[in-house]
Length: 116
Image 1 (tube, rainbow, N blue to C red):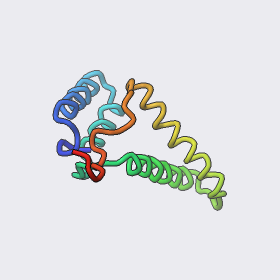
Image 2 (cartoon, helix red, strand yellow):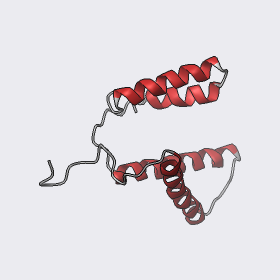
Image 3 (cartoon, rainbow, N blue to C red):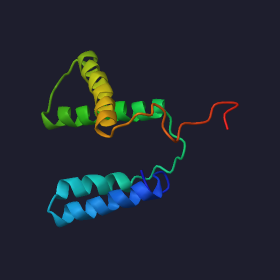
Image 4 (cartoon, rainbow, N blue to C red):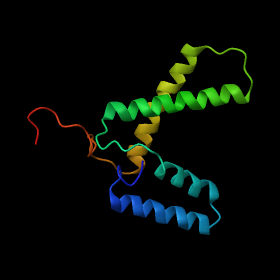
């Protein structure tokens, strides 16, 4: 996410919240927000499928970090995938609930033929 992909109002609100978090010594929160805002993804259209894939692949990257951290020699990829899929869906559902999302289609969904 960067200023080109987020609405200017929400971008600025998040930036202010990061600054406020820094002022309150909530460094982890501030750094998390700033890291998200500094992403290089300039893509304007963003489908639900792309969102779900990004979350899924992001969780796989986290799982790989977990495997590295514990220096595991083997894992059952199918079991790991089940956990990742369940948590990816749960993550989306929890975010939608916590943000009071009623719309099921994002504002940046690609237009379908005939849609204006």
